[in-house]
Image (cartoon, rainbow, N blue to C red; front, side, top):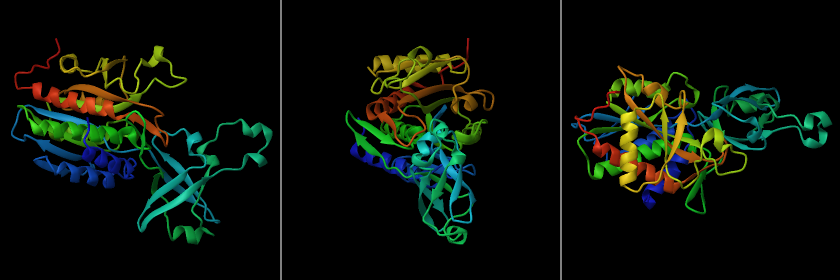
Length: 356
């Protein structure tokens, strides 16, 4: 189970805005927490944050969770002071209609509301059409362009203005579960590892730019500089326990069913077998997900970094991905952190990840 202190830190981390390319605020929150138990805490030019336990140990293990979230960016300000926005990451623009936004500006946060033509004045044929992001504008209460430009600027990023909420059955709702929950989980796993370190040097990393980078973003930088022998990536995956999900295509991953372990071409079979062994012997619930090609996560970049890194993907079932109200089970988070910490304790210099 997660402690009250860990959950309080998690909510602070989730509520701190940090879209891709603008992750510095949540990164600072993450590093401040890491300083409570990690022996080394640092950051790099790409914005990644690193925390190390047992720095003299061997081999080196990398725990990756990306800290960025999807967001929005101001593209244009018109003569009447309305803002027009573009996406940072992948959005279903339907969920933006009527939302409150929080822009991160040089003189402090500016709040706005997303506007759209009222249904009453739409033509009948337009009422059934999907809303495009170009159909929307943001109203910050400005009377004209000059007044708006005194408060915001083209290029200012923003996020949905939504706070973390506790739900029944030990569930948590937030706009930034993807993948602030991964950055939290790797740090929680490092915290547990610090209580009883094994032989390995373990580096937890809150990486940047995952939502917008096809080349691996900050994870590629970290995998190069850390030079780990193995890496565990923590991200979210689609929960399948709500209406409309096709289990024949995605698998069966319910909130509360434990972390999801991916099997596929880029996952180290040795590391996957070790994860399954630790989970089975420790009575940690888990499900399996099949990935015939890439995974759409940082694992895709990390496993081919340097001369090749033994990599596995541990995912958390997440309802309503890329929406203002993503939902996870804190039981799954706790199980994932424990599984990762215990797996790290099993790794020694004699652990052979060579494929055969």
